[in-house]
Picture: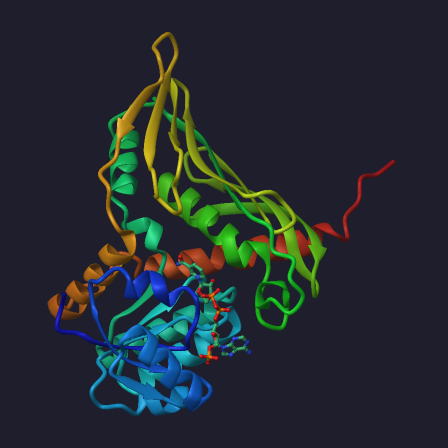
Length: 323
Ligand SMILES: NC(=O)c1ccc[n+]([C@@H]2O[C@H](COP(=O)([O-])OP(=O)(O)OC[C@H]3O[C@@H](n4cnc5c(N)ncnc54)[C@H](OP(=O)(O)O)[C@@H]3O)[C@@H](O)[C@H]2O)c1
């Protein structure tokens, strides 16, 4: 537990993962109505309840704000929280517009505040372990990355199906695939292609994308709401394959390593709560005046890739195969 005093913007379901991590002092919550804030604070054992997001930002006894709002509200409330002098941990994806992400980091840096994108999966030790294996040549020269994340979302009114609320499968689950490809490639894509199937209120309910990284590394990403639940992340080299069997949730993570002529090796990964590690990394960044693990370069690279994939997917709908 660290000294940082946290406030939560909204009563979102995801809050439970951070509250349950038992790694930070959540002292206040805000909701759009006082009644909901009061009930939530009572249920979760949070000391103060604010009946508006503005009221929480005006609370002088809060150092850091966790933004767990729907996607289209991430940037507006991140900016307002920074303007109120709070450090901000904002849920993924920060934004599909890279320029907005850059502006938010400009503001954070000018104000001496920490801003981080809440990609909890990056904090799990299996990620560093996989990066070390790749760097040690475990699969030879990295050539291809495959990332996938999907699960049914069909309930009318769900913010994830709303274009106005920056929904879509790439925003919700595909952003993990983009993050996975960028993390294993160790850089930013130079070129992307994508196609989507539209549904809901004009969002991508299935999206598949291709990314090309420096050094002739290609990545494919698959994500969707109109698909059965599936997840995975693998790196293919010229000598072997490295597979994270449970990359995003990391409930039962194992790293599998396949090399020609040898039985598949199952490499044990330590159990860890990546939400707790994310909160501790954030607190250490505030205390130590250092960047968080998922800081500016990462968040901007992520938003640029998402923006380019959406541009490609929407452009692809106007292209057809010549007879
Ligand atoms: N890192 C992870 O593991 C993970 C997992 C799931 C989701 N997420 C991310 O976390 C964010 C929240 O997802 P969630 O599924 O937990 O959200 P949710 O349960 O749908 O809750 C969102 C909250 O936002 C507030 N809100 C404000 N304006 C709203 C509006 N116009 N419509 C709906 N809600 C509104 C509501 O709180 P009040 O009524 O209290 O104001 C609502 O409870 C998303 O960005 C998602 O991508 C991350």
